[in-house]
Amino acid sequence: MKKPTRTPEEPDDAFSTPSFRHAYIRRRARDVGLTSTDLQNITGVPTARLEQLLTPAATSAARLLHLAKALDTTPQNLFADPDTPDGAPYPLAEPPTTKADDPTILHAALLTGTGHRLLRTTVNDVLLWHPGRTEHAAIDLGKRLRSKPGPHRLLRTKEHLQLTSVPNLLTPHQTTSLIRHNHRPTALSPQEAAHLLSVLHHHLHGPHPGPTPAEDLPAHIERRLLDPTSNTQHHTPHPDVLYALDLPVAETTDPR
Image (cartoon, rainbow, N blue to C red):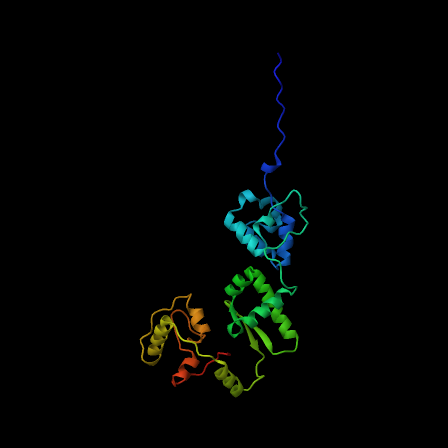
């Protein structure tokens, strides 16, 4: 009796090697304002060879999540779907609630922030933006504010973004009066009170207080407890603190 011949099994599509949607990744990078260098830093491969070198097998989970966040999408959207053409749009991580462009969204965020001033890291975390996208939006917003009539200007530093006003619109007396009337006292935490007492003691008598942890410094400056020129090793009380305690106030260049 002749034995039946075994036929080769058909390949199972369910176990086929996954691949990325490279055209979608490039398009999303353009949409969110990433440069070729930004995309290369995120993926770890030269952008010119993205299709050849960026593969799921060579991409760690951490890098995959970082890439999805930078592109404002979900990790699932980065993988090719046999039923969806690569050029077809996938949904974003969160459907946009507005059609406003990035500079307008950044402008609204700064208007909402305390003192119209936000840490760049806060903008990135709250808006779910890559640092490159934040920088591009800040550059465009700065140009837009300078080109149109209005009181706002954008101050960009390494760590902060802040809306300021065009100089000399108000007199010094008007500016000082507004600051005094608009400043609302808020109770200090025990840690803030202890640190401020140490800073004031140094300001009046010395010696220098202990170093301030880097993560606490922005908050103390934002609360107007420390002068904006303070750093982790050198602390100066904010002029508002000295004024409230009827202590001599030195000249300051703080625009707020």
